[in-house]
Length: 310
View (cartoon, one colour):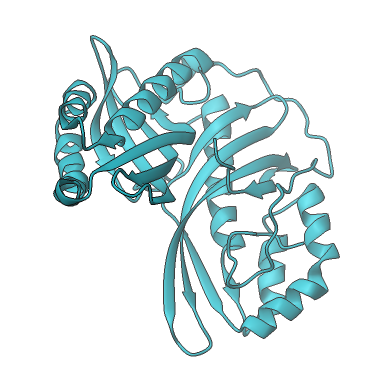
């Protein structure tokens, strides 16, 4: 079984989530204290859930469109967007509106998974994966795909409103900046998940053993056991494909963080660049969800998947 199912050009396909338990149960640290944190994302479940609710509602509203009722989309944009988010939405939908004039279309967007990366009193940053289904009204022809997005939001009279919209996601990694306690632990888990996603989506066909060694450095538990059990089949597949794949994490945000259990779930959208044996290059954007667990002094990946449809 492959470690990373979604890098299909380099590894064998695997549809199931790979998860398990860390080899050594972690010691329980002090309890989470969101009041002591500057960034309370995933530390204050109630406040985080409010942002997730409002961001999900806004994204589903403004990224859905019915050419028979364009005023409804304009109203949704006016309610949920401001600033750069308004301009970006206009840019994204300009082509849709032009095409819909000749080929009426219905676009439905559904949030599959979302998470808050930063949360303070006046600003939130979130990452979301959405499934989108577009249907032409004249012939019923449908297409579908997944969108990866990051947003910045600000609180308003009717909840959180989107002020920035980034497609593809853009949430730069932040180095440690003096955080302590639960905030520092959460940030360490998120950074480790981000790094693991990059490592697990990076393959060097000219250095297969080195690729395996790098994978081993960021995984633990059942994920490591399965990787090692399937090593020969992975070796054959990587050598046969001859591709070199490089993964670059575009963002990272925790959907769940349990400091006492030493466990976190993190969304990490990744841009992969695949260079074939013939030099042809293909770039893909893939949305991963990783489970990371404390393994000694480190956090390592215990599971990785692309979230299934909602």
